[in-house]
Image (cartoon, rainbow, N blue to C red; front, side):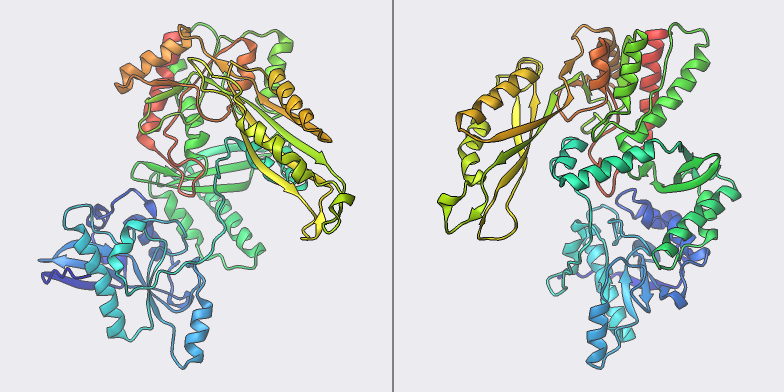
Length: 570
């Protein structure tokens, strides 16, 4: 940190309300709501930040001619609670050496492990120097107060450079779920043991049969009784795990006073709220699991249908909104079951729009006009277990499968066609052995999946696989699971052309027409002879810990859905 701006003056504030809210918020580089003035002030003003709980506000502002030009949420910490970073071992070691670890200086957001900006300096040409100035001011303040250390938690990677080489980059461990190339939920299940797969599917079936009613609400629409129930469930969750629920009931009520900042999913059973999920929406961005995939699309569809029916009370045809929770996994009791009911009733559907997050960078830049088929398999190869010192007394299924595995991987299954890429095969898991290094395994299990185009068929892929395995004399068995056949909306289809025209008119974009990606509920509807198109929000953050969607995009998406209904049924 060689850049020094001598015109800057550092000031420290014992409460966030000493800093102008609009000026603070203008320094943020993104819409992360956790560093918003409103959120931090709500924590302080509702008694969530207490010295007795180890939190004392000490916010930093850099001023140039009395004008705030950079800021950082800063706290004097009397312990390490509520940080989601566990440095208790450091504290004990420091104290055994005769020092006092606490208080320390912490640059973070209380009670939140969500990554985001911690050095608020805008995004101008001067911003890098201002961020370095913030770090220098923290260090100077710690030295002035005789503090043991300065910490910055869950900051952006782009902020690391402001700290310099003489800072220690600490790597703690958290358990996060990551999508390691899983193209759909069955891919994830396939990577698990049989017992874990069975348990997950059983639990999902129990939820589906529970009779719960899921309700999406903006925080400003909840009444006091509902907020009390939300807080009670939050408190009970912490109590059940032996932890202290530090967010007060007043804090939850305050969230309800901050407009649409808080969004809440409520699960009701016989009218009573029995479970909740809390989301925060900042500056036009909605954060939360499923915000982009696919709860946002559901919300847009509901609004679109309400507006369409109000504008066209005597519209032609019928419109239905189908919601299920069983797209992934075995997918037996969701849209598949509904499709079977349609077939049994001989009920005809003309068009189906699926709200999958289809866009790449901008709403309307891509629509899904079809999907590849997905064929998963569990291959079992049997050998004879024995001691590795006596290989002739055993039969090693790993060695026996190796040449067949090579041929399966290198086989060219088809060339694809104008609408689909060539069929691909991927092995996702191979497991054999007892865990000992001196035992020839008696059995091997391998999981693989075909993503196939209309240039191949399910039966053809199964037959070709069997021929390859037989060619190498294996003792084998395959359990197949067909997740869905490939489907394609005709190029001149009414729905396909309507969606394209609406996107062009309302977004100014000529959408890419793709058949890529994983599977969707469309695979169950298309075999009924239905034209299926997928249109939804930007998919850049789906399944990530900071999944989010632009509220403006959801509003525009509702307009797209409504315009489609008007053209087709108005």
